[in-house]
Length: 61
Image (cartoon, rainbow, N blue to C red; front, side, top):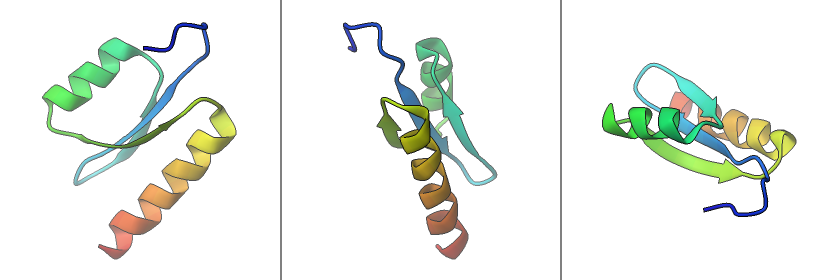
């Protein structure tokens, strides 16, 4: 777990959406609902880049 109070952004996707969350409880809910973890980042700019990459990959896929 991230011990230095840095925000972690988690990128998830399912058949309908791509989403970014920072809350661990939300992350667990998405995993329980069978969303797929695409990646994570420690800053919002990188998280948005990952989100865009994920959207383009699943739209092609």
